[in-house]
Length: 166
Image 1: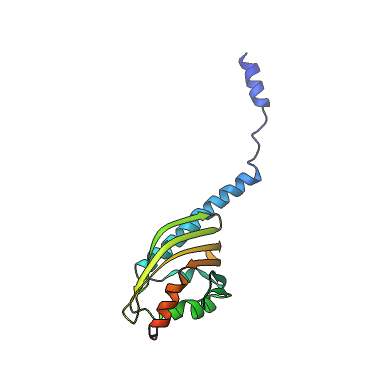
Image 2 (image 1 turned 30 degrees about the horizontal axis):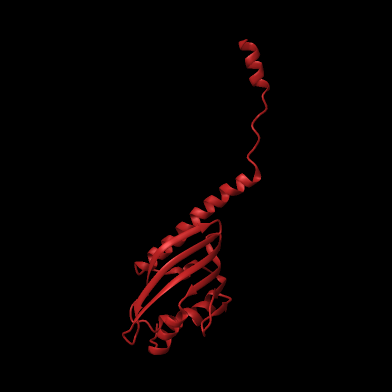
């Protein structure tokens, strides 16, 4: 009996390799964890007064601000986004814009961040906004971004405060 059992086990087929979709899921899971960590560390640095999220952006990032108003639209590079969307607000803030992250969700190459940020404008008014950003990442950098925020609050800060030189 032991010989028959041993021969039966020896003749058993080798386990099949993991299906391609299982291998892809494992890669997606590690990408997801890495992307979430990269974004979380960038926001922690921003909140601590160190470099912000701009370093995460690919030079040719496509950034879309949804909604209506002067700043809504599509920006086709990091420089375009910084100059036409970020700088108009940042130059009207007397204190740093400090983010408070509520949640970060990561799904493969997509990272969603829900946060609020506040500062004081150069006119002394409080600026506060709620944001949802959706990033598509490749190799640890953001290649596409979508932003949802209160554009009325953004525009009010830009329109009612004097710009200062950064």
